[in-house]
Amino acid sequence: MLPNMKPLEIILIIVVILLLFGAKKLPDMARSLGKSARILKSEAKAMKKDGESSDGQSAPGTGTAAQNEAPRTIQAAPGDVTSSRPVSEPNRTTQS
Image (cartoon, rainbow, N blue to C red; front, side, top):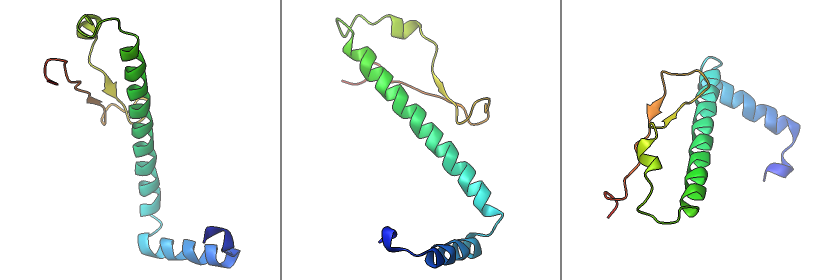
């Protein structure tokens, strides 16, 4: 469907989007979409890092380093402390 679109059709779609949402709301929507994408990317990296570190453990019950670490926080943007939130990770005792 998309490869068959002509330039006039693309311009018409952009005009309709501008009329529906307005020129003031579009930058806000794009900004929030960017924040969501950054959060998703950081969550995916954290999950990948957690998966790699759990594969390297010799025994599952001997991980005392995880207890000494500070809680992780996820930031939506560098320097954006208003949207930071602590991440609570389940303990092995609470997963049973």
